[in-house]
Amino acid sequence: QVPLCLRTSLSFSPRPSLSLMKPLKQDLSCVKATRSDDLESNRLLTHFVPSLWGDHFLSVPFDRADFDELEREIGALKPLVREVLMSSHSSDKEKIRFIHLLISLGVSYHFDKEIQEILDHSFTKLHDITVGENDLETISIMFEVFRLYGHKMPCDA
Image (cartoon, rainbow, N blue to C red):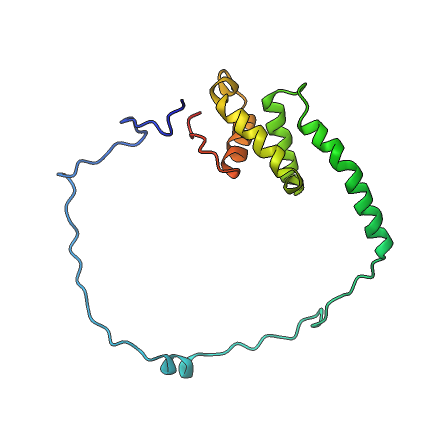
């Protein structure tokens, strides 16, 4: 079992002793509160120059057939990506890096169930995965992916 956090008394900066610190004395003064209507009447308004680009939006024509073709391509690629994701030939690190790629591309929601299964399985072997790992990029990717999917990965793993 991995501890969630380790407590240590080591620090890079020295701690000042409380007996050496003197309290600061500050004088407080009372100020009359202003009313909101006073603020509105005294407020200067800035007049902006009309936009060079105008106040209209461009419309982009699209062909429904193009979108249908894209949907067919996505439907054909989903099983291939799922097969790569669930492949037994790749290591847990490679799977986590692939999950990170899917997250970065914005398509991980298509494979949430599979990703959750992989991360649940990998999280039980977290110590074995990270032992001897000196690659900071891989560790940071693992940290991000596990935390994103709700696993409490310790900072010192």
